[in-house]
Length: 127
Image 1 (spheres, rainbow, N blue to C red):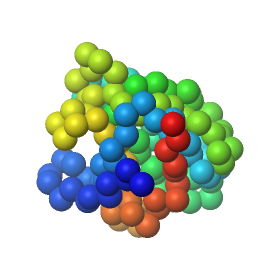
Image 2 (cartoon, rainbow, N blue to C red):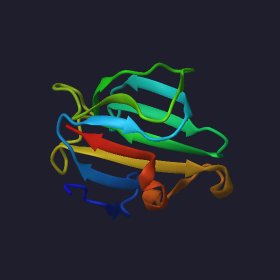
Image 3 (cartoon, rainbow, N blue to C red):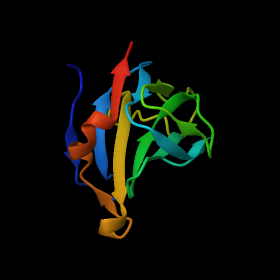
């Protein structure tokens, strides 16, 4: 597997980075898309999803394509976008090479980032 589940403890970088260039990102649970946008912060193309019936948010950064819209309810197995961070985007994720950033926030921690490793089954990467 080319998943590199290193947890970065640096301030402002809470989550795991996975080696991923132009891989389709599949969300493996039913959920509600809270945000899906290209912005110019360090996250670039970003998708945030609340899994159905759960008090947490899965956050995916450095997407080059986004296939879902804010407010959309998705079913498990939905391809939500493509990893890679678009050319010319500030948030393309090149500080450590091409990667997908996966973060997790939950209500129990007061909306702070938590270690996403317990939720690795939320997604899979396909060619």
